[in-house]
Image 1 (cartoon, rainbow, N blue to C red):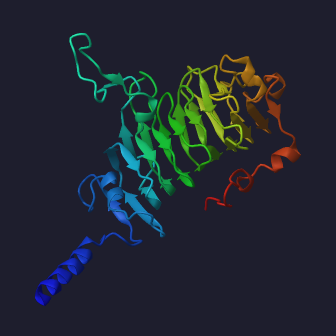
Image 2 (image 1 turned 90 degrees about the vertical axis):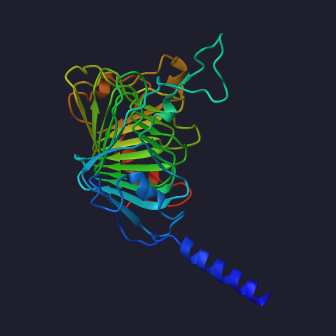
Image 3 (image 1 turned 90 degrees about the horizontal axis):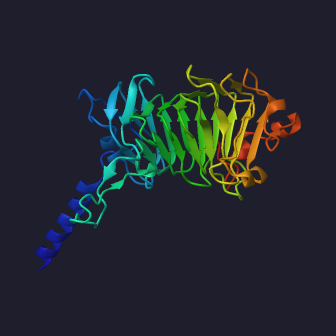
Length: 335
């Protein structure tokens, strides 16, 4: 009997040892499409990361086109996905909202031979970030679906997310900041799209970013909750457009208390004099928080803006800093 117990203990100890994650350390993981690294896909490298890490883990992605639909799950933290080169390290997918998909639990019948449903906006992402303290650097995130409806490139739900020198490409609904009370920081990024291509309820700071409008439409569609003080802040950004985009609004309120501020930005001639639109609902004019300060360029026309938007004073603008905007349950600031 003693021998049997000892054998069981030996097996249990060794199973525990074998089950240890060999990647449970701060060493960098390397990804390459050509097979020269241990991982050929970003998803494979994400999969081996330990849950709730308390150290910084880098996944370095070599140049290449990675056709992947990636989820960074909620149990992963402190991961940095760093591309070798933003122009040539590309994560791409091509889902759009009007793709037909199976409707779970609904079989086809003679009366309903095609029970499929459309995919909808929120399943179309190329990259979805559910985890906290996640960083992307020097990489392109792209949804290259045809213009057949909403097609999200980047979908965020986590808190304390940072995007540095990234290219985020798409058409309608390029970036969905999908969770109220979460904080996102974009620096030196290039973001392009068509309609409402930066939208959602999160609090997000855009620093020194280039925002490219591809058609006549709306840059932002914030859905800031009533009880959240700040939504989208664009500081020292440059708004440019394709030649065919001649009438673009800074934003319209997806939800009544939308908050969007452009300050110290260069606004191209494509920005309409009115600046903002009420989404066909005059009641939004009483609640939407649309602000500007010290903008320049042909599209900066404060005297011609809609009366329900506001031009900040120098004193008011000085108070709006990342420290102030990101102050919620802690004093987190992106490094």
